[in-house]
Length: 536
Image 1 (cartoon, rainbow, N blue to C red):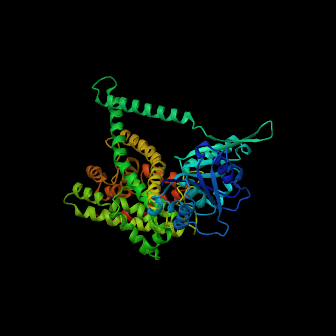
Image 2: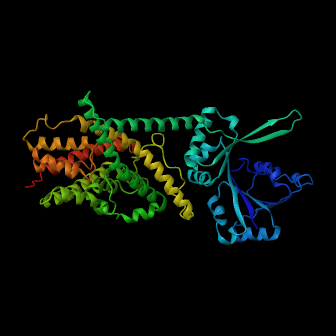
Image 3: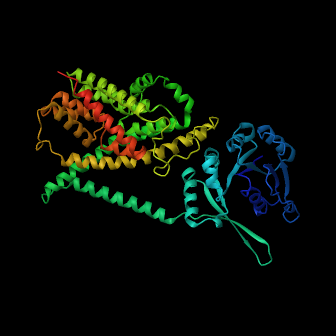
């Protein structure tokens, strides 16, 4: 027995029953025994006139008026009693559609029936109100759907309708989208249609164009770097240097952003707000200490910490803990520690100084940001400024009883969204930093003997060069010829906390006021700590 199940989801008066009536008239359902379970209290009724000789279908309507829970036993009893070929389940939009779907994932039910389609009916006029007031419920319905039908589209302007389509696609980009249309015939009868919404070919064209241009430019760059010509050799050499720096920085940074995005997704999807807060003590000072050493277990650079801090902030983890982790993690990263040991062989004090100075500065900045930020102040960019994950799991009150398959799917969707949201800012920062590394020459630079000025220069170079914390120690070692070891520590300690790349990424994720304050505090605290440390 292989019974097909159609699950129709929607809020009151969205058009669920009308859609089922339309489906019951289809040739595909001829000669079938059909059970319609109405877990709903709408005004529209199933059309029993369809239950006639012409259609030759037997339609049984079961109204769940008493609010009985629909579970595996309920479904098996109906199947045993009526032996249907197909089941329609009309689900009230206020109920959790995931619970209904999970019934058909149970082994005992899976053997006798399977879900053929999950359809969400959305009234586009009411959609903004529902999304604003019941975002978690709406997101879950859309995320679960295979087909999405939009009704009342004639009452919307084209621009508003396109905006709603985009919002839905952000939540579930793989679902088929249809629109409901109805026209009156000359005889007064109403003709209904559910028409597929055409996907814009322009998007496909743009995608192909960008891919083609990217391949062409990449091929040109590879060719230029392998040519051996004397014409304009000076400019070509600079271009080759820029190209090599840009590509190497991308290769270094992208894996860490991907790891950070994946960790961020796991935090968002799999760890509830209450569980996450329990990890950090109520005492702000202790939470900073834990956050400072957390980088030992998450070997990521400064690029990868930003998506994680965004996730922690969304889960209402104290700002002090989030900022401390973001600043300290690249320095206490085991890979960064090992590279520093290799770069400064015989100079163990440099390694110890870098770690402890980094932890002290990170914790101090975290605490200052905590006490200088108003309670419950929203520091993340608003929805209009940055794309959010709309997977249905990211709200504070999401249900943790979702199936493992749904959580895995949501993790990958969230990872992709986070990666592309952060990645574009990282590319811009890498591009600018590559220009600085190519154009700035230390040979023509005036190097003062004053420790304060030297320290500021090294902090400035660390900001402009934007070198990953896992390899900056080897570059810093080269500066020992021109700068004192105390000044070079500014490059090693401040560089992983603040550079061109992560500054642009911060502005892309957090509000301008918060980022400017954070930058100022990092520079002030770092200078104050480093200028008073003396390393022989």
